[in-house]
Length: 409
Image (tube, rainbow, N blue to C red; front, side):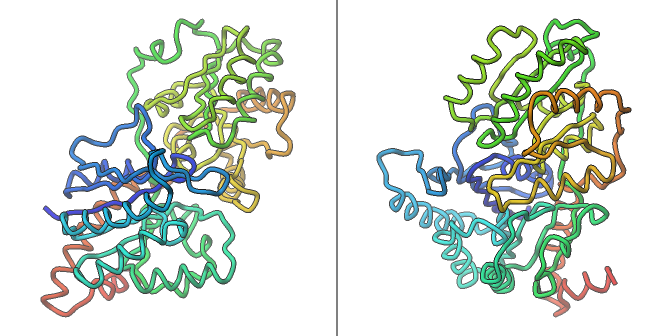
């Protein structure tokens, strides 16, 4: 069985981890997978048991600066440990393929450990293939110098780009202006999502002993480092909704929302028995499948859940930074297709939100759409063919890229 070493670093939210875990869930059926986790531990989040999980000393960003999980170590000490650990683990595993999540289209703050790793691979194990796993919308507008760096890194170190999008929704050409300068193989895998499997008898376990006629409103903000203003507005809007519809609201703050903001939110909802606030659930897709409406941000994984469940959805595309247009780009396309309703962050207030929720509930559910949602399975199948052809090409001299281009011409 061939071996894959999968590197994932989430610096602020948890979307990159969730998507990576879904890909890994498929990869383990055909590969021995070693998952490198560089972010903070999330209670309740589990990887498939077949995966060997390797934890680096945790790093994440606070106000644009690195923070470490171990208070006894400095940031520079953690960087050095991580750099050496990555190389050591590679030498131990000797994988057939390294997958880096998002890098080099982002994660340049981690060049201190990633460049030594890929240089080590090229010098000691040139047959190991290196692939980038990339979401549908890059989001951040890169300046020319950064785009030069991306192209240089891709062409020097990477054999393959796994672009996790349905080309009928978003192509790599649309996402990266310098696409023609990328020499690596680029394949559109389809969207990475999990199919909802719901036991209808367990709906009450999810939502509690509510009146069956109550409207079930799910509210989520991913990891929780951003989006707290949406949750506060939902609590305020609930009193307005009371005049229109009986309802229950289930809020998930995300594991990274600052405790002070969670306390403030719970205090605001203290006298509202129809609002339940929790930190994290591994069953978010089940909640979404059984909800009457989902109110959320529009990150990749939440969007995938919307697409796979067909739930009515109202989204607020809040970015990590002013220049981060990932959610806004995705949301604009989804709205044009009639898949979601949305409120621009600058228009977010309780009255507007309540009105939007009512309007959205009065629409028919969109149903499960026709996009390719088998991105994880397609990624596995592509890598199986790709790595098999690499073995054959060494024997025959025919490159997989020539076969790929012929097949796709």
